[in-house]
Image 1 (cartoon, rainbow, N blue to C red):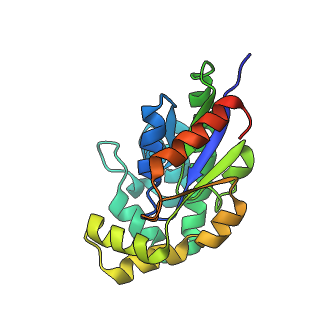
Image 2: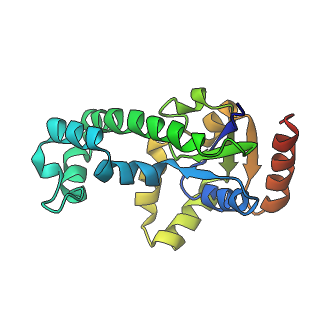
Length: 200
């Protein structure tokens, strides 16, 4: 039975990975947004909900069953150990969900898993190939400040918590440059063509 290739796409904040995955989606390639699915699973996955309640208390959820994001973010904010515990609960459930999701696309040549922390969580080791969307730090900071209306210091703090671009590039199988020096669409089309040929 055919199993589609699993391609991971990542990039630092402001690199434009969402733009790149939208292009792949336009080409008919299914895209799994791991970060969105993680948020959804935290309110729909019974196993994960009970694990979070056990670890962080019943206050983790509001009376209507939605995640108490304010409470949880206050608990894990600046407490790396607590954040690691939360991620340790969420990531395995996302992995399980991704496997089930991929099963629905056996007719596709490949599927994409988009995740901000593809390398940091070690998930990239489970995928067939990884793609990094690259843009220099100053460009990314400028983009995020404009997009999210955030102060520069806050954007820099987020970047500090992510792997450096050089580390990501070293781990990646492919790099798509979104630094305003080269068009993105032709790069995506070239990679798409290689993946269809099976000789990426």
